[in-house]
Length: 110
Image 1 (spheres, rainbow, N blue to C red):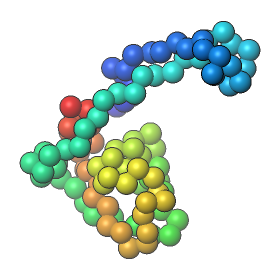
Image 2: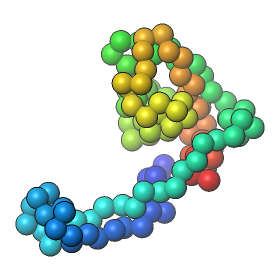
Image 3: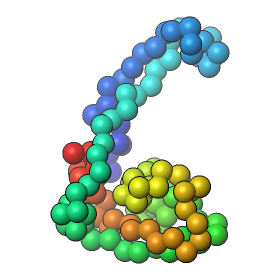
């Protein structure tokens, strides 16, 4: 499974703003934020999903491990459900988990 950053530009920043976190390095290297969009109703309907009821102790990375065998794709579940972090969820909240990860990635990344 390719990284979500595969098409992202690498940004090198040597501004004084980041000096405290550069730890002696001359530049800070990070990835440019990739553009993402919300899937349309038709796109959502084209991807098979399963429902997971959020419960105490759940974490996005744990769900990604369970459904995708890779914790790095926690953000797909978060984005698909419009809940960017676990603090947005309460016990009993239903989450839709896209089962076809590659198709969901193509839709989210446009």
